[in-house]
Length: 397
Image (cartoon, rainbow, N blue to C red; front, side):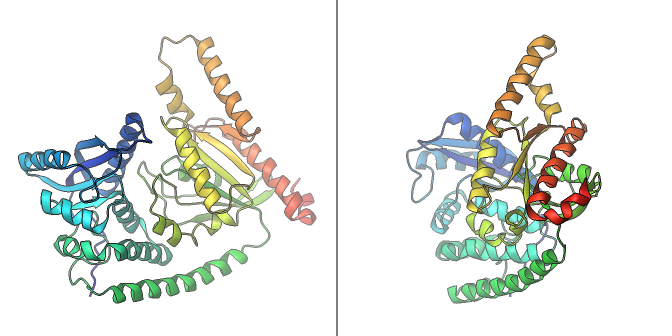
């Protein structure tokens, strides 16, 4: 019988490990490690040390070199209170086993960490089933190396899923479980499809973007609803849809799960039904945290994911959010107002050109420029009514 633990009993001290490969710069890896630390914090871990190593190719046995692994081992022995080692890249079952044998410390990778967070955030039957399916798909190719690893993990981060106590050692059982979960998801998907069909002939607008860019805050502001929002990754997991009316023009607004770099492909596959809101949307609102140092890379990650979902060509309004934070971090108090205005004008002109005029710069928390955003959305929604439901459009003017 498989037990599932749904909460982190206590915070654990963690060491983060990343590899600088030939196609990456050191600065990129530092930013990736910052994101990994934020993921770890979201899961309840406290990062005490980070390690990175330049390598042309990861070591097939231990991912990092022997010298680096020994350095990590000595740090763990010296401090004695390190309960977790987290690698920024995906590990094989045998690599996990070899690393744990050397470090005598529970080891997980980025995918396992993200799955753990998703497991805790999942509230509905659909989300819980999707996460459980992704967990089993993650485990299946790692069976040979992971069973002993799973038997040792008594709980906590990375163990919020299949297999804490009486581990099934038979691959067939895991495959049967995957098959069962897929069938269960099909039934849930049918119900979700019926619910979407019952919404009537409304233009559908979906908020998309990298995780933690402020989608849920914008959802609350635009729809005057109470959608859960906090400064943590994947605060929103289940899709929320609300009916919104701007100047007698109704439309459906959906908040969707955030994307992230190196999102486990099994998780994307499992959540395709949830992402149907994106695929079926008439208009996308792509929210970008412009205050983030790597906002352009995050924007590219989202665009690639949208392309993978077949939604890259949908009418899109790019919303550059957190302008208040951007200005606070980019401009010091001695900067001449004229220089500041020139920088902001150049920034806005650049993205107006990049998006062919389909962008707005706002602050959802400070509620700045929201009137412009509402008008931009209203114009696009009315345009889509003319295309999709022309016999209804005349009533919305």
